[in-house]
Image (cartoon, rainbow, N blue to C red; front, side, top):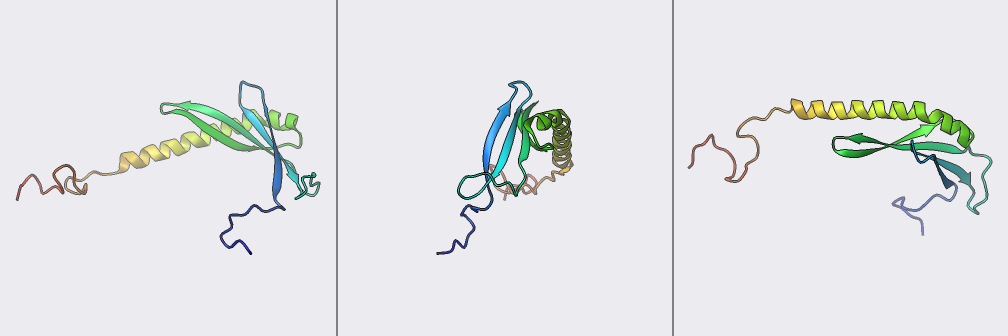
Length: 125
């Protein structure tokens, strides 16, 4: 029976995951492509992702970003540059969200109600 709602894993798109860390800056995930039988798939490239956290006033915010390189060492050398870019992008996104929140105009009587129901300008009917 064919799976029509795309909830099945694709056996031709599997990866084995390994994680590396220096216990200071963050971690690197190495995704090695594998065949359906679990053996390495040399026809596809290994992929590296970096992971770190940034402290914000609301707590730790996780950052995930792709890394360049064909070895863990090369990915580690790319980590600082890509982490800095991810921090900059996260800061831009947070600033944009802050601007959107600040630009919302609150008009009395259009809040959809509150404790006493919809506002009618202070007049009780």
